[in-house]
Amino acid sequence: MSDRRLAAIGAAAVVAAAVLQVPVAGQAPSPATKTTTAPSTAVPRTEWGQPDLRGIWNFGSATPLQRPDALADKDFLTDEEAAAVEEQTAKTRSDESRANSCGGVGNYNSFWYDQGGKVVGSKRTSLVVDPPGGRIPSLTPAAVKRQAAEREARAGVSNDAPTPGGWLEELGPAGLRVRCMFGNNSGPPMTPGPYNNNVQLFQTPGYVVILNEQIHNARIVPLDGRPHLGQHMRQWSGDSRGHWEGDALVVDTTNFLRETVFTFYGSGANMHLVERFRRVDADTLSYEYTVTDPTTWTRPWTVQFPMSRTRGPLYEYACHEGNYGLLAILSGARAQEKAAEEAANKKRVK
Image (cartoon, rainbow, N blue to C red):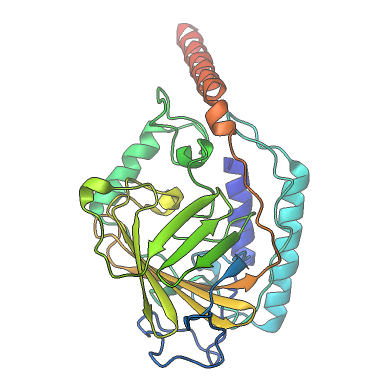
């Protein structure tokens, strides 16, 4: 995703600040509140008695992950403000799609953008529900230093371009999705993005499979109580283990190899992720996650939003250009760096 595309999404987020969240008596849910241990008869259940999470679910939202500064003291929107959010979101994404101008190395057009987003539920102004202010906690001093060093190394280049002099292991903060390792929104954890916000859940009595549309990434989660793998067995999507707490499926993930696409918010190999999936009704799934990484953030933080049942099938997100096109991406980056160096030399001579 280009800098221009990110800027457009960021500008829209200031206006589009309402969360698609399951209503809880008109109040924000407490991240410390656990799902009841008493199974609900209203929850659809599998043939073997577990809450039925199977199906294809859409987690698209017009809501920013963090509460915009302009809404710092506002927890919820009015109906009129929510309607304005929906209108502005549709317009912004439509304009961005028509612009169709990504530019830079390794980019492509955006005609498949979701053209809008609905405001439902409690109309919160952020997906973050803890801290209560709706903002991601402060970075630790070490993380601030890391990010400053990265900004300095990447001064003047777009998110989708390699760091000057960088190769396969240094395609920048967007390198994993440029290489088609992860999608824009799959994480883990999942976070609404501009397109392809679909996930399919499969269940057996002993396993759950989480299949993200973008980029066809499947996490196989055992439910038999087995321990996590040792740190010598780190994986791109981490090592997930699941269990039931009442009607909530809790997925605990550790042992990440390095950052995921969640790196735009600072994630790394030390992240501990706890996700909760809870079937609310026939067409709604509640998704909540808590991120803990004391090497990055000063405290844990929690996000919550709903997923809506959607018709299938789920098609393959056939992302290969970052693999087949690596020669062109890297060659183009080297050519740009050489041109910039020659221009700088000419300027010095004058």
